[in-house]
Length: 319
View 1 (tube, helix red, strand yellow):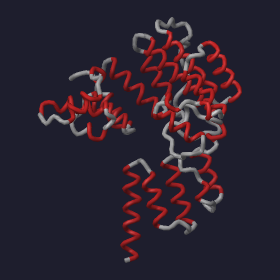
View 2 (cartoon, one colour; view 1 turned 180 degrees about the vertical axis):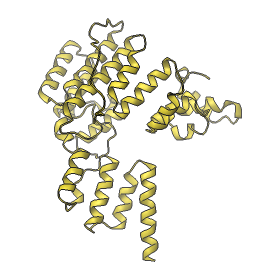
View 3 (cartoon, helix red, strand yellow; view 1 turned 90 degrees about the vertical axis):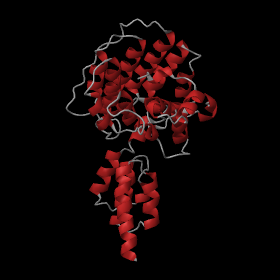
View 4 (tube, one colour; view 1 turned 60 degrees about the horizontal axis):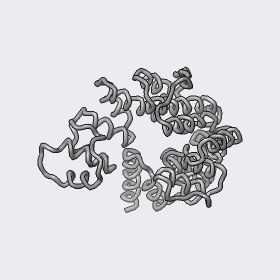
C-alpha cells in the first residue's frame, strides 16, 4: 500500500480516479482522499486498512475509525488515534497516545495543540457544553514541552501560536499574547489574521490568504454565515459566542418547558437544529416546510433519516 502523502499533484489524483482497472482500487481510494471525496473513497479502500480508518475519521465517524485503529500498531496508527481521540474530546488520552512517539517538530506542535485544548476545556467547563466539553473521567496531566529545541523556525512559531489557545477564553490576555507573538514574528500571516479577526478588524484581513476553514470562520464572525464546523481558530468574542452553546440552550429550553421562540435558537450544530424542530413542534408553530428546511441543514445522515421518516409519516397522514 502506498503512503497517502506520496501523491502530490491534483492532476495525477484526477487521472487515477478515472482508471477502471480493479487492481488499482486502493490507489484510487488514496487519490480520492486527496481530492476530499471521502464517501467515494470508502468504496475502493481495503476493509480495515489505514485508509479506511482515515476516511471514517474525516467523515466524523470516530467510533468506527477507532475500532479499526485499535486493531493495529505503529507510528502512523498512533498519530491517527491521537487525532481521533482529540476530536472526540479525550484530550488527555490523545496527548498520552502521541507522547509515546519519538519527538520531532511536528509531534511537539501537535502535542501543544492538544494540551492547549485540554487546558482550555478544563477552564471553561462551567459555562460550555459544546465541542469543548472534556470527558469528566479524564484527568488533566500534560508534560512540559518548553524544553524541546525546535529545528524548524516555522514549527516553533506554530507551537507558540498553538500555546496561545490555553487562554482563548480570557480575551484580553489572548490578544496580548497574540500581539507579543506578532511583534516577534511580524511576517506570520496566521498570527496577524488571528489577531485582526479576534479584535474584529475584518476589513484588514486579506481573504485570499485564508484557507477554507479560516474563511468560513471569518464569515461567521462577520455574521454573514451561521454555519461553522470548527469555531475555535479565528473566533472573535470566544466567551460570548460560547454562551450560545448547546448546553445553554438545552438547559434554557428545559427550564422554560420548551415555551420559547425556536427562531432565537442558533443553527450552528445538529443538536441545536433538532432543538429548534422540537421546540417548534411542542409549541405547534413550525410547519412541515420549516422542518424540511432544518433537515437539509443537519449533517448527520442518521438523524436526517429519522426526521425524513417523520415528515413522510406526516405527509401520508394528511393524505
